[in-house]
Image (cartoon, rainbow, N blue to C red; front, side, top):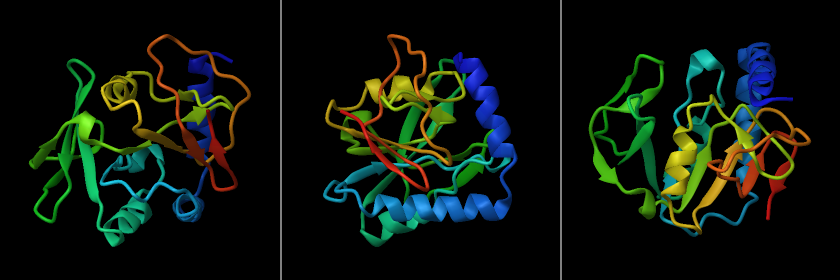
Length: 187
């Protein structure tokens, strides 16, 4: 399957999920994260879900991070050059949905990609080698390529791995991907 075919397939599968299924699977994925040895770092980047796209509810992971007193980093997207700027999420951070319904910080303390230790990566699909398919604009591949080489990249998926996804030279592979049923680790 091509990336565009995979995008279509997984958008359809996500659209078929009920709100209860999304909540149950999101909670299960958050609980799966607790089994990983990733909690000795400082800066954790997380995406805020686009509810209209039926993305994983990351509120459960946000609660884990806050409970562990971690620095939580969120992003703002620039659709002119497909880049992202990153900000520390604090009690005073104001969030507003952009034109694509992505919740983003209006203000905040800037954080450089090189400061980030762990990134929770949104995706539509992934394969057994750690390759991922997103929405196709390359935001996360650009961002991840600017992080430290040792930054952990953890995909979050409602569904299990595909066998093989076509890749390009700009794709950044995941270190882990969590589904409700499986923890995948890639080397």
